[in-house]
Image 1: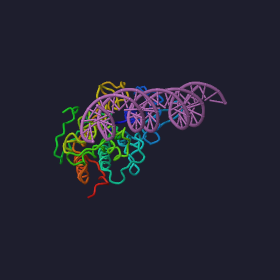
Image 2: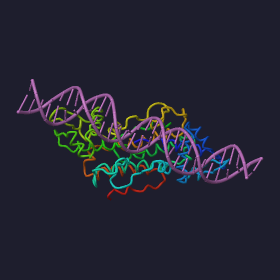
Image 3: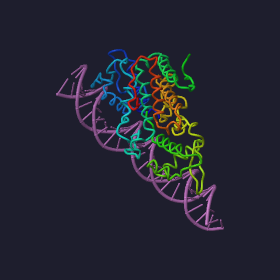
Image 4: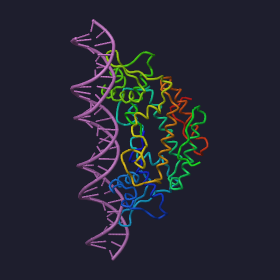
Length: 167
Length: 167
DNA sequence: GGCAATCCTTACTTTTAAGTCAAGATTGCA
DNA sequence: TGCAATCTTGACTTAAAAGTAAGGATTGCC
């Protein structure tokens, strides 16, 4: 249950764009340098994000990338959805997309759990915008802490508070 | 952000053991057959779970696997932790474990978010036991729905209720 | 028009995760 | 003791994800 490299770097590249002033843009070279990845790799990520309508690209000299809409209107859920291709679809194929068929048809105990987990993560991601990530970050920490606390209500079990939240 | 094949199948194998009556056990062959995977593959998973102290194995004829403690005492978080080797450790190495080093030292914006996400998932997993999964399952659906609802409190945003929860 | 800067796209290589195989070790039973 | 059933372990093969390379297409500028 990890964030893939594609998800992580795609998110990071978008973050660079989110920090630009209106009208500015970045070239592939600049984005790649900022993340310490190859231009080719950054190109692939930006292509995906472009195709999904999250970034706008202009070609030719003076070209580059910018967000397709304001950072306030882009939620992490949008981004992850794009970079995490084969989402849980199909009938009873494995959640990972590796097994096309599995022996558990219908009532394979853990499937509802996996789906619910996915929904929980998705809910969290829907509450965070790119704009929030460009701030001082304490903003996001607060939001995530809220979610954390929210979860613990109504269920009898202690949750350690996130260590990185500055009280 | 997917559940890996190893996590999914490991969990499923444990579920088989959780359904046994006290004193019973299953051989590798039985476990493998139950999941539709090869015996070799099941062997690898059980070995990991054994090493982590979640299952107990006995060798020789009449041997097999059983849970090392009661299903009520095994939380999904325990299981996932074992099957998802390189957890977020180290300094600023990528969350995915692929990049040993990255250019973002110190304040790489998204890291706190990734960690918080991980904690959110972990919190959810800590509230579900293997025992709950062996029940009618509506049990777990309820628990997860609670978490879902809990999250939405205190944050102004609509969350679609999980489709698979039978009202 | 010509050239340079840039994005676009496809095919390829490398690395990692997943899965397999086979030989070894342990136990129970006749 | 010997054999069959079982788990254990390490090396190997295969499949998927990640990353690279290179040529094509578009644009702006002189």
